[in-house]
Image (cartoon, rainbow over all chains, first blue to last red):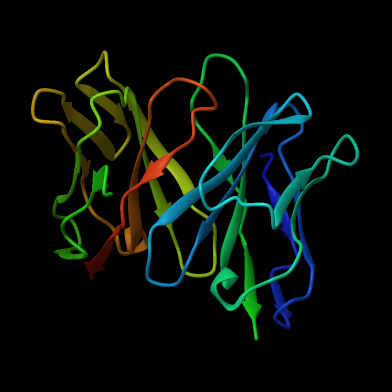
Length: 114
Length: 113
């Protein structure tokens, strides 16, 4: 069964450093998403991406964040200058375009900012 | 701003009995609802969904009920099994734009053998 994959599973970084989180969505899916879950809190929407551009973003997704689909398979989330409060689980999800609202999630990357 | 609320942080059920997980929402624009199951250190796994044009959807041991007038949905698991022990998230989308999901805080289900 096709699945969303994410790398790395755990990333530790120093405050102020740049990080790139990687995702490989399900191959025939066209919508891509990033969500995050701070420890003890709910899963929150960050950004959606379709047709090589951002389709929607939340207030959390400020200028420090960017997304890219550099090739036909990878979907990345970059945080330019990490803050302590960026420590969270980051989940990638993907969805087929038409006829379904179901998003399928990857296993997540745990980001720890020291 | 809790548009999707799961008021029970935890629930314990005996194996073989019914588990009922509840979810309330406030945004009347939501028209598609999903339940996800999550184990520690894993991503949310899709379980079952329901469109606002239906009031019930069933898939094996899992049934989701939607009461639009009360803005309430519930997930029934019958019979409950120890492997069902996980955190269950209710999520909703408004069927517009990018269909972003709004999640509840989750309910931790423990099925006791």
